[in-house]
Image 1 (cartoon, rainbow, N blue to C red):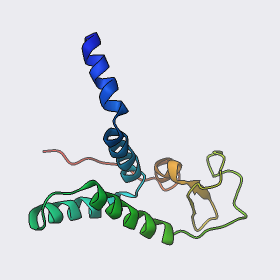
Image 2 (image 1 turned 60 degrees about the vertical axis):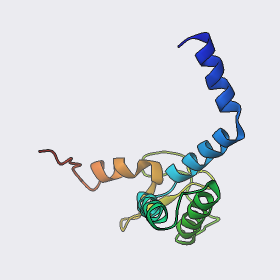
Image 3 (image 1 turned 60 degrees about the horizontal axis):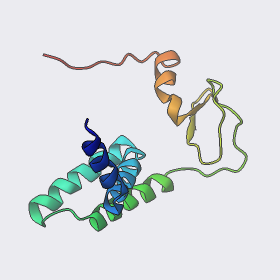
Length: 126
């Protein structure tokens, strides 16, 4: 990458539009996969039947999915200190508790599925 290319990238990253798009991207990735799928389906529907997707439309779509995600959570003040894998639980973290009373942080769900539930992950190929 040339010095001119690096300067161009820096100028683009300084644009408010770029920062807004990155913010939407981070918020979208923070949603559960089901909510992301709903948004993608709505983008296709919006584009096919109503026209282009605007930033305002996208912000509203993500906000509505964030609201749905947060409404499904049970808010607690007396939370556990750490989860089954020893990860510290901080204010704002999401976790679940299984039938045996094991507390597992959202970031450790895959470890739980593999180590505790003995789930085997697979990928379909030809």
